[in-house]
Image 1 (spheres, one colour):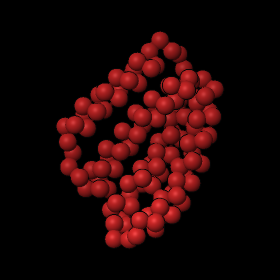
Image 2 (spheres, helix red, strand yellow; image 1 turned 90 degrees about the vertical axis):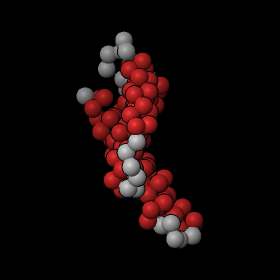
Image 3 (cartoon, rainbow, N blue to C red; image 1 turned 180 degrees about the vertical axis):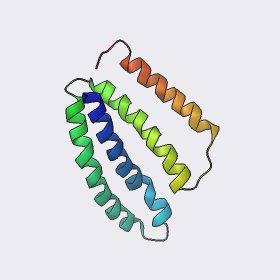
Length: 115
């Protein structure tokens, strides 16, 4: 249950993070950079409102390294659809190879540990 709650909150957090970090490249490309910074900070506030509780919940049963690699796996799961559907960039085979590498890292970080 802790892993499910943590992952769910991290997914929501990561959606906000991805838009804060990269959404401005599509929607604000014609604006001054500092406008993108301020708007990204506003979006990042929502990221933190989900990420902090996720990490606190996760830390009750997961190691810090497990929390970090879980975050990285979720980042890829959120980022690839964002790139394809929102940023309208083509799907590339490199996404698969990167996903397999990160899934391997998740596997090694969690093997032998019961959550």
